[in-house]
Image 1 (cartoon, rainbow over the protein chains, first blue to last red):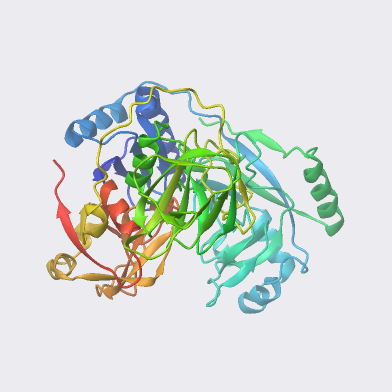
Image 2: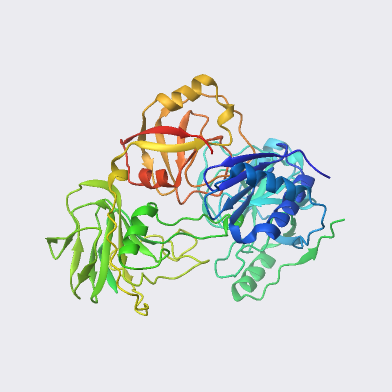
Length: 244
Length: 284
């Protein structure tokens, strides 16, 4: 499927390509395919590709002298029919301890949504979430697919310290805090996994187009996995997604 | 090696930042004023990407634990070695045991100290730039030790006679391009952007500068999309935020202007209460 795209110069070095402003799995897949096609043509000239829900920002290494020509070139690349070897996408299984000790806002959400805590956990673990992109903090995944019953407004005053690994709900989104940081999302659990590790060659295991499945674990299992992660012996469960 | 005797407001290692990691949410970071840094490195015949020390308001003090050649560029805070005034933008031969300090502010905010061969702190993801959560340290504290690259190749001494053009530090003109959401602005709002003299609030840092004046608006929030150092965002309160080198990689406020690379350097030499005028350029 081909989308109607808009192209805008953005500063001296970049071109912003935009899709229709909606959150949609097919759009994120199209963005990733297009990105791969562009990189295949001009990888050496590109410094960074920044993906948003409905946008692809191409940052070039050198100042763009002929913007109009660059845009027509990019349009041509989009219309190329060739199949590209996109990066393989995975479904990652993420263990989360939803114990009230970690899920410090679970009772509050339960009270206001009138959903029992057990049902909140079930709704949160029953969904396959799509990774749209990474932003806000290094390794912070923007996930789509949260069940609408779990939509819950951000806190009116953000917490100064949200712990590393906190699994949280903010409005229509859910996510994992890769590092301790300030944040206004409601915390429902904690994962012992590192979503961002500078000591790894690829510091984030997940990427745009991947999927995330949360599973509920006990405090005991949480501590066990935490220890394994520390030792470097924990392997995150992953499955290849077959894109047809 | 150099020892930090006083770390003042800000003392850190910066280079040209991290390239190619923004899709993992990792900011580019790097020196705020690239012109001053390039100049400091150039006169030492260093590589462009060699790491330098960035300091703010000349409030830092250093002791040299070995003799070396250094250069100082950017903001002028009356640099002194062993209490004797020294020139900026030239090669200074420093003896072991000497102390570099600063005094009265003449102009600017950020000063760069380069050393022949470059500084050798840890490289993380292709860069040495200090950043919280990425490098082990995000600033130097008193007593910090900064190693120097001694294995520098002997490069022919071609002391360049290029003059440091300090004029940019004093100008108030900030050249910008229209940002992706510029067209959302009404005629009235666009006029205000062009005519108002904006002043820098006390919220200004390596992440971004918040400006005091307001452009009233009722734009709905946007879906998060890429942002760049130098992007001017319009917040719901009407205040503008100019993103700087340490900014996040995505944002959800309308991106109404984009500073030129040169203007990011200019702004990085400004601080609280300084004023700026936006000059809108057209794409060729």
